[in-house]
Length: 392
Ligand SMILES: Cc1cc2nc3c(=O)[nH]c(=O)nc-3n(C[C@H](O)[C@H](O)[C@H](O)COP(=O)(O)OP(=O)(O)OC[C@H]3O[C@@H](n4cnc5c(N)ncnc54)[C@H](O)[C@@H]3O)c2cc1C
Image (cartoon, rainbow, N blue to C red; front, side):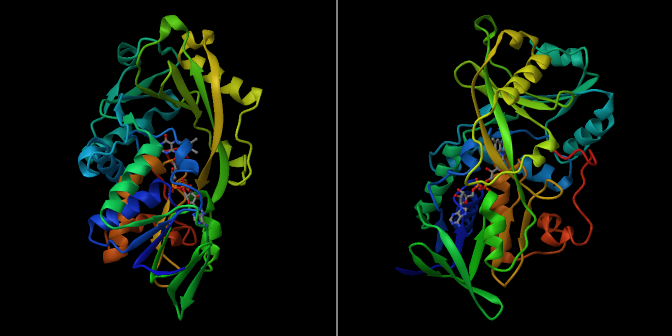
């Protein structure tokens, strides 16, 4: 088989699917999305898919607000597909250690139009009565936030892109790239060569390897991210907001089946390096017990709860826990990877940002400049309002 396309996107996770959709929306329809297994088969399919707004740089705040608005209108924008977005609200609790940066973050978020406000611990408990609050000194509340379904989101974006002319090739592995002079000429796959002058590397936890195909060194570390689904005791089963806890370093969200999803917010997870093709996908007893204990530290009633399911996915972590979104390498080579645990909620904005980059290039002042690969070599990593607290 020998094909030709204007743009090839490598990776059928939510980043690749969103990029395909947004390219097509901008009128670029001669696009092939190449996925080595099936859509959302990588970390996207395991994502907790929380769409919180608590971000700490002007660029990411603008992006996550734009993304939320997309999730809210997903059905309209994709001709009837669903992202499974459920608005639950979001609560964040801190102690004195992070009170000032949390307040600065909320002020920044408000300045770009995010609906968030400071709340006292007592007000937090009014919103979610099962919370323990005696170790909290401050918090914030986002009424509009919620969570979605990552597989449905990806499938919906890809299907809508296909309606507009994008070709989706699953079970097709990209094995190499060809250049002519200093520009991209073609993509080699397990099903043949696709001639193309523009290629987007949206290969997530595999993006560093794909980068080497064009001589790029993309500094991505792959690590395990652990999730426990904890069953509520029968008398405590009720809907609840997503609760992020910067004291015990966990995030939570409602999970179907009367469960609460508990995940860690530990930058130490980076030490748990993983091969995305062969890693420990379950949790051992210490790991699941730890998440249960931390969940019960915030929701004491969970002392009577139990871990009903557990699994791990992989994060693609860049050195400053922010993505690389750039045109870099040979002409026509684009990268959108290194999402460091943020890539689901940002994906609608990222897809549009990449599509703009591919069609219009970069202009000074564009938000995309913040995510240039060269920031690491320049010694200018992204630092938000929490400084070295890297999880948002
Ligand atoms: C357990 C877990 C929980 C998370 N929770 C959240 C959350 O609550 N909110 C949030 O915003 N983010 C969250 N994230 C992060 C978010 O899910 C990811 O950042 C996002 O899904 C990354 O999407 P992606 O498309 O960039 O990459 P991926 O999902 O990694 O997709 C890349 C795709 O590329 C394909 N591929 C790779 N190499 C090749 C090749 N050579 N040829 C063809 N195809 C190839 C892979 O098969 C894969 O499908 C979580 C992640 C995990 C693992």
